[in-house]
Amino acid sequence: MIFLETKNLTKKFGGNVAVNNVDFTVEKGKINAIIGPNGAGKSTFFNLISGFHSPSSGQVIFKGQDITKLPSNKIAELGVARTFQTTNLFDQATVLDNVIVGHRLRTKSNLFDAILRTSRLKREEEQCREKAMEVLEFVGLEHLAGKLAGGLTQEEKKRTAFALALATDPEIVFLDEPAGGVNPSETDGLAELMQKMVDKGITVCLIEHKMQMIMRIAHKIMVLNYGEKIAEGRPDEIRNNETVIKAYLGGSASA
Ligand SMILES: Nc1ncnc2c1ncn2[C@@H]1O[C@H](COP(=O)(O)OP(=O)(O)OP(=O)(O)O)[C@@H](O)[C@H]1O
Image 1: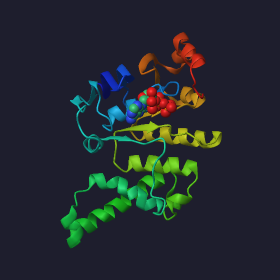
Image 2 (image 1 turned 180 degrees about the vertical axis):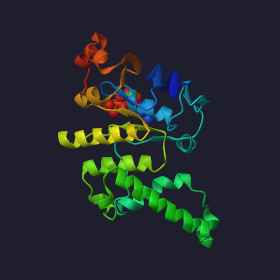
Image 3 (image 1 turned 60 degrees about the vertical axis):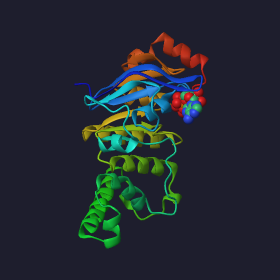
Image 4 (image 1 turned 90 degrees about the vertical axis):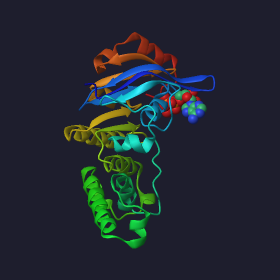
């Protein structure tokens, strides 16, 4: 069974076709990358898969289930997590509290539990805390658990974004520019972290402009240009693909 796939996925914003008839399959347990010049439709494509936008037409299938029309929280519950280019953290809250919010999705407590401070609530609060510490440790930020998120560096924010996604116990994570705005050695560290996720059994799908990193870590790459898939293949195939080279030379890619 194909793990996750899109079929003829299309999104129009007025007359602008941001994603045009894209067929894409994700390889399970691998690092899958999406590249393309600015405005190619990459983020929109992620938004369609994770339910933040509804497609104009086409389908998203996850483990054989059509998830096209599901709201984003339901899609997340099924095990599909995503991060954003700019993760909005609560600056005045600690890193730990920011991540705890990410795990709430998996808990059952409701308003009554909160008012009555039931044992279920207390138990779940403890579970959330433990889960948050576990994912912070995984991303290498346990030493910053008590620090206010507002004081984090860009690289630490990127790691926190990973932790937020991991706190939902995902089977697949969609990472939007996970290494945007960080220096080369930090980029290497984040690449290692993505590999570590894969080693743990999580499938990774990322959008990235940092071509060297992508060519090194991706198992498979899809190239979007003006909303259309213009190529898909292994890094060496993509590197030598003339259509891709032309799109980049003619476009505004910041690679
Ligand atoms: N909410 C929206 N409403 C209207 N148009 C949008 C919306 N989101 C994206 N677009 C348009 O869709 C196209 C694709 O944008 P998108 O952000 O998906 O590209 P991208 O490949 O992620 O770009 P970048 O690499 O710069 O992040 C662009 O023309 C953009 O202006």
